[in-house]
Length: 270
Ligand code: ATP
Image 1 (cartoon, rainbow, N blue to C red):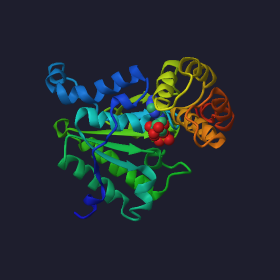
Image 2: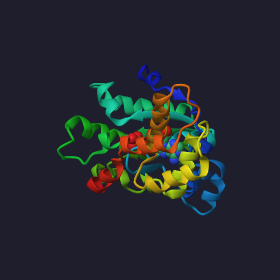
Image 3: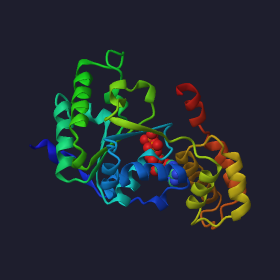
Image 4: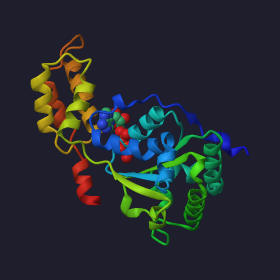
């Protein structure tokens, strides 16, 4: 089949160390995905099936994609990524086949993590406004593939969404996306870890600046924290292109420039 080649196999170059904080979350996901790979006999012993799929849900920019990539790397599994909306735009009229090909490819190169971002585009409640005949058929195909994943196929679906409320409940039935894991706004410790990571190469008045930033960024997503650091460096450069130090005032400017929208998003959606 020709379609199969269109799914590009990636070797993610992200490791757990590139993800600041989120320690409990990492452990939980690691256990859900890596244990069945490494210790299938333990699952057999207790007569339980490893999850066919896991849903990562939560506001944008909080490391769902990063976690999926790091996991594949860590577990030494192949990684196939697809975005829900892409199925309809890239494979117009052929979206069901794209789903079939995706899973066929995944089985071919197993062990594989299939990362399905924005799965709400496919799995939105049938009969709802957003759904159409086409998306209903694509969803049906996805369910078929999930149900067909054999325990031994060593393919796991990692799905991600910002809008869990719009998912079709059929996707969440046992044996499908068995587990739903919330990837939320970074806590203080996680914000500190992300900020430290992102300022490693900047000369700053370390401790006090990081601590002040941690305190002032409650409600910021990981992506927004990264933007704050980048913007602060840009302000320092704007002041003096030869500057080698990013000062607190630059971070203050950056904080007013990068206004967090994530908390408002949370209130609206969750
Ligand atoms: P979306 O729902 O918009 O797809 P997401 O939850 O998948 O968002 P990512 O794409 O994983 O978010 O994160 C966006 C960017 O934010 C990352 O590329 C990274 O730069 C930064 N980021 C988010 N969380 C972290 C973290 N814990 N450690 C380091 N960087 C982070």
